[in-house]
Amino acid sequence: MRVLIVGGGVLGTMHAWQALSRGHDVIQLEREPEARGASVRNFGLVWVSGRSEGAELATALRARELWEQLGAEVPGLGFRAAGSLTVLRTDAELAVAEAFAASAAAAQRGTTLLDPEQARLRNPALRGEFLAALWCEKDGAVEPRTAQPALRQHLQATGRYTWLPGREVRELTGTGVRDDHGQRHEADLVLLCTGAQLGGLAREVAGELPLRRVRLQMMQTEPLGADFPTAVADADSLRYYPAYAGPALEALRANQPQAPVAAEHAMQLLVVQRRDGGLTIGDTHGYEEPFPFDTDEAPYEYLREVTESLLGQQLPPIRRRWAGVYAQSLTGEIVHRARLTDRAWVIAGPGGRGMTCSPAIAETTALEAGL
Image (cartoon, rainbow, N blue to C red; front, side, top):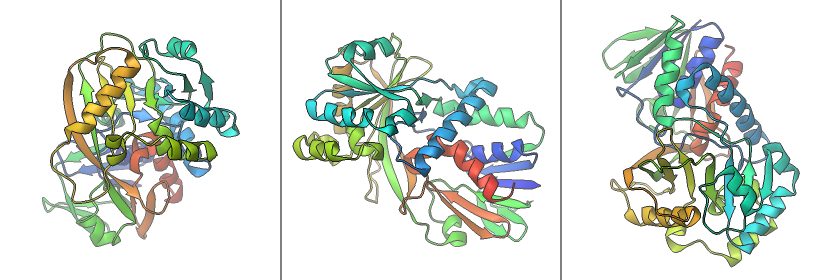
């Protein structure tokens, strides 16, 4: 079978990997010279810890297995079983963590509650004051800026994979697609992984998708000069991720409001170290369009302050700041997956789960599409 993938981000590239691993030939088209969307503007976290019970957690756990398998085959992905620490600094935050740690959900994720000394054995860079930390052994990390090129290089070695960047698909035909160079590409199956572009071809062939766009801001420091071996989250992530819902979380929301800037920008702190030693730090969530074209400095200052309080030291200089946009399902599904024709599907809107869940999402598409 000849499979054509539209979209060069992590979701499209994982679909290409799944098709190739099942013995098919693959052509992948990308409108930019290189993927420049949310797939490269994220933490590179394989984040299992906060996923909701049921299908979302099962997808994340399966994706974690697939990332580890791929990481062994493709070192350029930079996969590492880093684990994560969610740091707790108040009694109300600790109460949420204690309730979660005592639940069956914690065992599924390999999550335990650590005191500060135990947490610092996992990550000695945490020299600030805190009460405890949730350790999740299932969380991992990859390098988002290099993962797609490394995986494509691996796919090209099969001799059955063609990468065509700088090609915007303008038409879905009965036998494939036509790009903006006027070239037709024939295929037995077309998978549209259109990212955050909800207009244009996506709207034309699929109508109004049940998705919304979300904007984020992040930054990266110069090398820290020390090992930062785990990912780290602050307790605002308890408010953000569905796994922690319950009476203790409701009490936290009622009695411990977020800092004003964090509430305004729907923030949580996530920190992960890159292979060059720098720290990727974020993030914000903006839901109202039109999105601003510039970045707001107040969230960056807040993220810096919280991170420095956990480290007990000043951060290195900020090397770069950026904004990104991803698409998120409005229906609660893990990703919007729909058959358009006998030989075409659209797969879009994994939201902030895209980097985590894309290998398993692609595997499910392969099964549903009969690859």
